Amino acid sequence: MADTPIKRRRGNAKSRGGCSRCKSQHLKCDEQKPSCGRCTRLGVQCPGYVQQLKWLTKHEHNEGSLKSTAEPTASTLPSEAVLSPLPTLDSLDWMSLTPPLAPLDDPQPNDPLLDVSGPSNWSATTQPAPIEMNWDHNMSFANLEQITEAHEPKERQIARPRKRSLLQALQGNSGDLVPRPQRSLTHESTELMSYYFKEVTRMYAMYDDHRNPFRSVVSSVYSHSLVINLAAQSMAAACLAEVHPRFSAIGRRLRNQAMEIVSSEAVLDHRALLALMMFGPTGNWHDTTDLGLGFYNLMRDRIDSMALSGELALHEKSINSFNFFREAMIHWEMLLVFAVDSDSMRPCKSPIGPVIELSPNKRIAHPWTGVGRDIIQVCADIGRLVRSHRVRHQTQQFVTQAYIANMRDDLESARTLESRLLACKTPDASTILEPDDPGTPVWHLTTLAEVYRYAGLSQLYRVFPDVLLERLRGETPDSLTISSDEHRETDRERCNRWLTAFSLEALRLLQTVPLESGTRDFQPFLLVALSSELVCDRSQSPHAPGFDDMGGESIDTEFVEVSMIRKFVLDRLAHCLRLLPPKPIRVAMDIVKETWRRIDSGLQDVYWLDVMMQNCWETILA
Image (cartoon, rainbow, N blue to C red):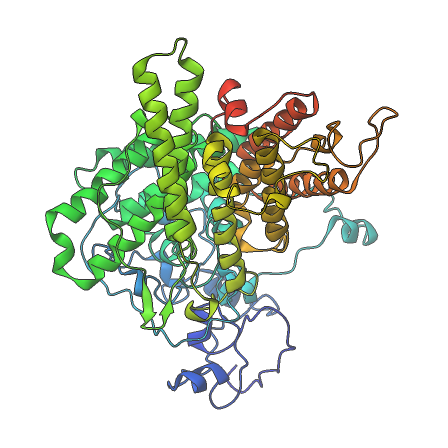
């Protein structure tokens, strides 16, 4: 066997071979001799190209030899089948969040890691045997591949005989015409984890590289942490709910099990917090009315206690870990405040730390907030204000002094938030560490941050038009009036026309981000929030230029422009419906279509948030 020359394999997109270091991290290796190019660039010793081979005996005539080699020995079993020491994330550091990725072998039906019936093989959240989770920050991960592309170990890949298709069986007049049953869902753990790493990790972060904790950290601990394992499986099952209703039931069951584990913990460690980030905001994937508010409150209280207890001063890694989770709460809160009344949830009290930097001049984009942390925080404050204002407006039957005072306070708060949002700075692209994700360059992240700014301002200006008028009055008269001095636009018409142009500008900016961008899961909220300003028929006012005296049925440039952007919104949501968990996206489409239906029927000042509340469609729009 040792004398058999190894044939040079043909190059293809997937790297099954390569040196041990590249294979362990599921990166493509150029297989140069004596040292691969990646190891040479890193200045480390290349471990070589030792292949794990298994001797095949199916062509031998000696039955005794065949039987003697058929039984697997301890040396041929995959190392993952033996429980290794349990890692701890108590000192999880997002700067070194992802260790080298271990190979994800396809667990076998009798693999103890698949036995979720009892806790004997698992650590629910915390267990000892700490290991450091560090990486080399200078490592190049430009060609990061999906970690599930090499699920099976080399032994099984080489030894497995090639199956005959049913067509080949027909052509060969073989009796093997009955399809062999596939593995049942009693082993759904393997398949769901495979789907999680293949699809879910890409949609749950703005970029998918080695700093995506939903891929890297989960791949490191899912075989040891039951709560992480269950959370990942529940997310995968929710994405497959449209394929078969059984996945919907499986997803709910797995999520409930993860919830029970976290709820039973007296103190939540970093592993439990990561699990909360996974199954907490994704309740709407299973049921659109499940907002996961209780888990938001649970995580908020834990983060506040971390800040107050002084444990962050113990180690620098604790500070980085805290900043990572604290920044994640900003995005979670921003999505919730538009769907939940402010008296049901309160924001985090702990202050936001500095942005996480790899070097003094390079900041790291967060998987959820990207580079728009401060903008999204202000948008969360805006959402809390506008929802409470609209709820008060719809429930107030009589005008009282207290009601007037509340309106005055809300208007003053709106002015303050407008100033804060306009003052937020989007970081320069040169100061941001480029993600090792070819589908999501830095400019996607900076563009999305700017669209969040547009969306936040449009909410303020729609609910508090006086704030917008104060801005517009500083403009030249020509920009605010129609060409005829006889008929000047009212303040209401000025605001409406300006808001339409403002939303068109924002959506054109979002249109530059391609469909394949990793930011797509973070776009549905923006599409919905800007949709209620896409009014096609404002130009049909009798005072508007281009009005047709023969019936007002002319189509002007503005009408066509708004219609095309409407089509973009529907197309982008339809694309999200195919690639993302479908239930919340369907609600987003319902809100948009109902908003436009009311606008096109002639109703004035239609606002998407009112439509959502009146139809009880509150959900997390992601």
